[in-house]
Image (cartoon, rainbow, N blue to C red):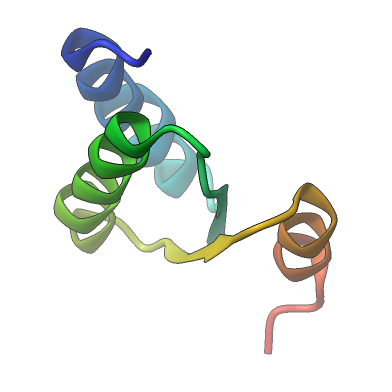
Length: 73
């Protein structure tokens, strides 16, 4: 289970840091656990708009990786 403190840390350091370093995309693989899925969805909905990142959710790592590494047009 993801703790609220871990989600907050991810938003501040990972998402905002990735954006500050020039990252353009964040691909999330949906968790099978409903509580984790809700926490991540809330985190992405509140933090991503404060960054330069585009985000998208996927059901597999393969799909997420393909989207995240595709040329950015």
